[in-house]
Image 1 (cartoon, rainbow, N blue to C red):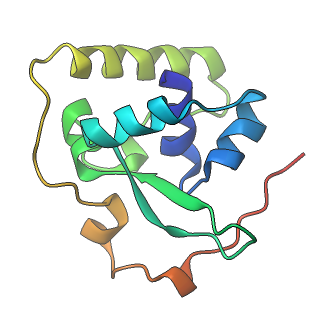
Image 2 (image 1 turned 135 degrees about the horizontal axis):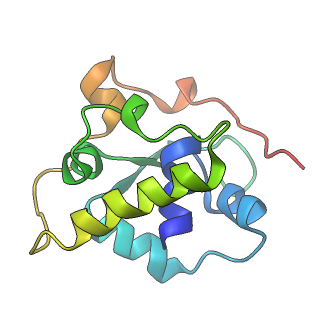
Length: 129
């Protein structure tokens, strides 16, 4: 679940297929459902490709639970690799242990900072191989 959440946080918007390409294994539908129920990710649209897969992004609740004001405050991945992942795990572990599930309204990070994104504005991201 942590890997899936980290991929979404750092590469958003992404599809389950993008996550599977990065991880090299299938993403369990239960993992995506749990992250959505927790209010940390949401579907923000669909990619304009066959099957129209859902595009996932993190939410304002995700940032609030980790004590962040924006995605720019996530630990940097370049040059720090495992240290950044460890820091992310510590922040995530503290957020999970904070108590009952937060049922606050889910607000997409980009929506809180910019104009609303429409499906036609969502780029057709191609996974790198």
